[in-house]
Image (cartoon, rainbow, N blue to C red; front, side, top):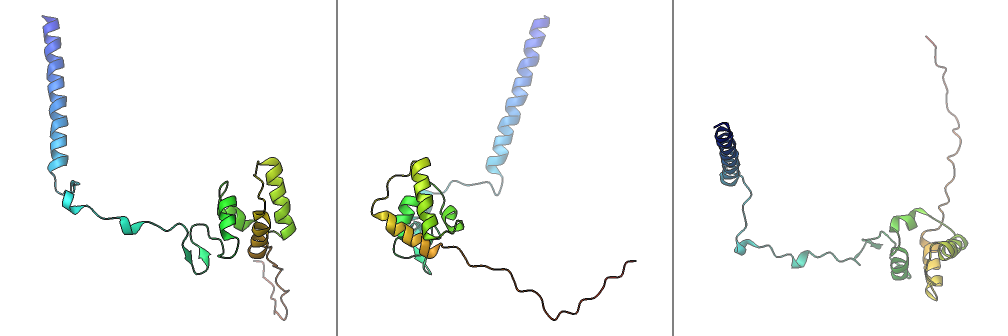
Length: 151
């Protein structure tokens, strides 16, 4: 008899759990504000929303941030294949430094031979991503300094 009571108890627990689950599902499906499945007539046309990956805006290649000039396509094809365009733009170098960097990448990072594109790429990078000539600000002159009083 104890086994019969145990089976009835388990069945009752199962019925309660299933009832709660079905009640919860019913609540979330019928409540106001629940997500609705769209009718086939309401499908949004996204054909005009495709982004142009080679878009140039205000002289800047939108996807990479590179300056639009001769050699841009070669730089995008050869540099952004392996790393972010930001890595290129933050490393401002002279023509010789760009050439040395390319040699280093070819020797240690398996960069393929650039052939006739190399000169175009190096000229582009040296022209648009050369070191900035930044100096220190000038010393302050004619300033009336005052002494802080210790309290």
